[in-house]
Length: 451
Image (cartoon, rainbow, N blue to C red; front, side, top):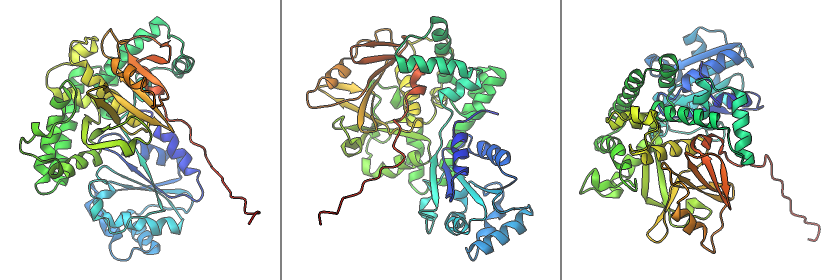
């Protein structure tokens, strides 16, 4: 069984009292169902699972009255499983197929007899079908493909090695050359294999890249089938065209997505729903340009200027159809490594809980990622070549007098090093770039004694 870090989130959620229903959202094939099933069976005396895709009749449980007693009566009659209050987890999988179940969560959580986890891969796409959302009774949790740390652990990297690497990251000290070389090779395999659990398991079991690529192409075809199934009307053709266009657009020098390459007569406002569909389905990751790399970034976003990344870099490699895997595994940077590396980092930055933004101007040049980490803005450059200490855009932007920044990070093939205020880190250390800890509570009270 592949270890996933979301498991610790599930355990902490179980200890909450009172608790909301936990709704886990993510793209298809990222391992939502597997990890929830494992958690349910290991942490509850009774585990009841309903999959609204594989069991088409299950939606009848939620027909008619949505009061808790009626639903639970229907559920016990349908599943014929023992359900003990306080010791039972009910898992509603692919809940987007049963909008009434999403509506009913409010009443089931209020009832309090059982714990509930929902999951779905098209929840953001089919939101209009839900008549009433369980606001205040549902905790949203996003899940992504396996991170590099999860991938490395699946391939046998020990916890002691992660501890040493983290110490090097935090202290700014170089990694031993043997460990550094090995971790780079492992990172090359992550670029090719990616983080889809079934694909990772195929690689761990066989180390056969041919089988890996076939598994990835099966997932790509599944995504295309999802577009055909869930997209509606004219949007279906637009979404398919955008999805198929992502690899070639990333292969361009500045990697910005140009609608004209999909439809030379297309207008942005007519394609907005198509872009949002891919993002809401978790299939694509948009990174928006900002007019100024200062907090709050959300207010500075140019929503019409963006890059569009794949949710998984292994899928991107499989979609390129150029048999680039051999070159990548051998560290050949002559293959357009820049676009592929940038996709790896977009995937990793998003997985680590950050929004995706970049900065570009004719005067300053382009910064790969501008990240709001707490109240500070971190600047991130991703370098694929040997001349990674040449970063004119980073120097220009960080030198603007009225702009303030946190960390300046250059991820590269080199070892850990710091030159003045610029940190150089090996690519694989992106796994340690995490969000600053937020305060658990912030109590502020106005003294009214003077009134």
